[in-house]
Length: 354
Image (cartoon, rainbow, N blue to C red; front, side, top):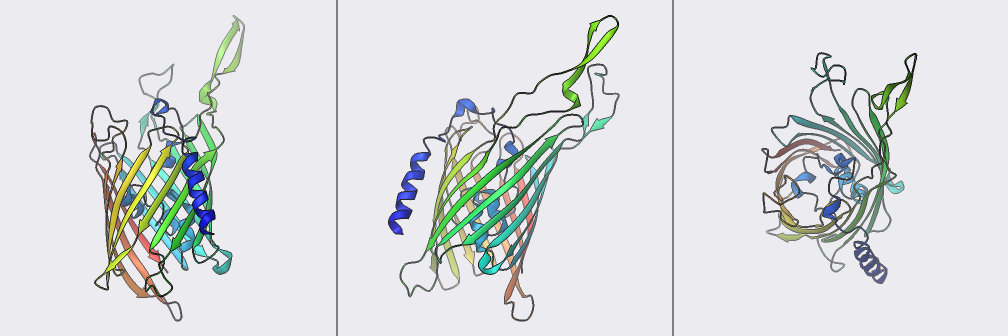
């Protein structure tokens, strides 16, 4: 089994050459809202927690972590995205353990872009009122723990984006694997070392359509017909991620977890991330991560507004959910990711683990 896993990691590392970062293609993909992490806990890792992600929030970077759901998990998160742009993101997710059958998860993300002035070729002055763009992501995930060490997960998701007279809908697939192990049979803490691989946003091309792409044309003075402007196809932003993490316990109640990942983007530069999480029992977790890409520290030449840093914290309150159900958790999650320009991105979430 170990030889198979090592071989698999070598092969997937080689595949990064196929999905190698290509900054010349930056901006050519569509559906890039699939890359936005709006969850309060996992966004504090800046996407590098491929190996140690768990629960319904794992759908954003490795659905294999869904298999770690104990019973039932409910999560709601709100994100103020790139403060100054007035963009808000609301996310809701639920995962339910089916015991030996696996874990099923469902999540929904809606983007609030605000109101835009409605104009047309015939009315360019904006006298027609306003409209609100619609950006929605809906995903159905399944995860299963095949052995004590191997977790596997997959997600099928539908994305929809539209304005009042033009829209597009697409389907994408994610898949991931996590390998979790400890050292020695008498190890007090299981699954210290975690390895993770995920491939996300694989799907067919999308195309816009609707009445907004049609217009009337004059064939002759007495006859007009309706013509359509065809929209070009666009691809989805595929991502291949490989990650590792290791739990270090000290003082009985404290844990320190260094984390690392390599992220290969089909439509942007490759990224390398490092970070850590400090945890005190189930009560408190503190996170920091830095996601590096070429020119990330150069405000003039970098390809995005992100500066690479991310900070996060979680405060949890254990409680008894009922007879024979054990301890459950109510948690508040928060993350901050600085940007330049704009004033950063804030995410806050409420999590209930029953």
